[in-house]
Length: 289
Ligand code: HEM
Image (cartoon, rainbow, N blue to C red; front, side):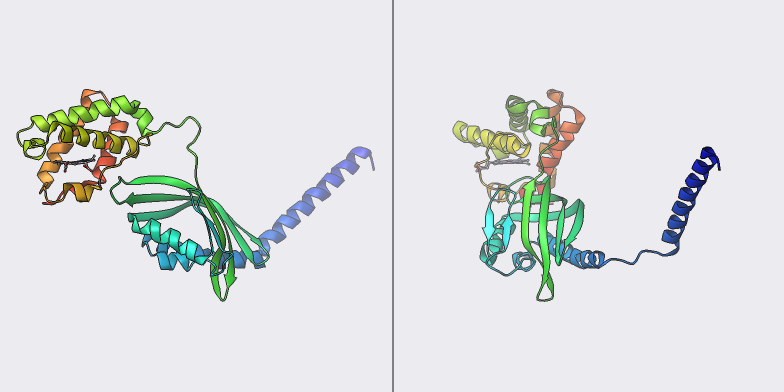
């Protein structure tokens, strides 16, 4: 046999072996491994936790954790909770400050290590905290879970806020920063004040009270847009309760805000993002349909 024909027959043999191997793989579907079964079982915990989180049930969320002094939860703000009381306390505090919460899984992967299953991935949280505008952010999480006493529980859970992609601008930056926001709010207040229909709300305020109100609104919008401001005022329900603000008043105020944004040529995307922040507190401000 010439060396060329020997090469061809070796190549053919390799191809035929590969085809045969592929064929047998198709003919015999792979049985789920022990790890696959464990992982499918461990997924139940993610669903249980999501239900507890979305219904703001601290006991149900704590029940997703190992009831042991060694259980560890690292919260997105860096708080390290060790032991069941600390874990439950963290959820109790967070849930009681929230009006609504929604957790959704973006992506992730499970890996089995013996009888421990690790999940690492990303989740999206949409939260409406009392007195604050609704916001959505992504978290990166990594947990270790085990079936203990017949129930899957987190033995270790670490959550961090996903950093914004490099170069991504916050709404605060896109709006043009503090001075641009302050200019829009000053224009908004001027328009509200100049509207005979809205004058009943702001008309009686002293200069000092009007100045404080202006600063509170600037700080609140700046903070909600991701700026370096801290809102120290009251929550929206408390500060507007009893004013009898109607749906119609709200629409008039929204019109003044849109006109103020337009005056400063705020682009449509940023305008809609800001209006979405403001609209998220509507339910706390409007009292009459
Ligand atoms: C129809 C719409 C609205 C009317 C008539 C209205 C009216 C008022 C008035 C009269 C006050 C003064 C309360 C006081 O000093 O005791 C106030 C407070 C406040 N409002 Fe509004 N408001 C409206 C919508 C909004 C919106 C959309 C926001 C947020 C973007 C907002 C944010 C605030 C803030 C931050 C305070 C100060 C809270 C504090 O003093 O601790 N308001 N509002």
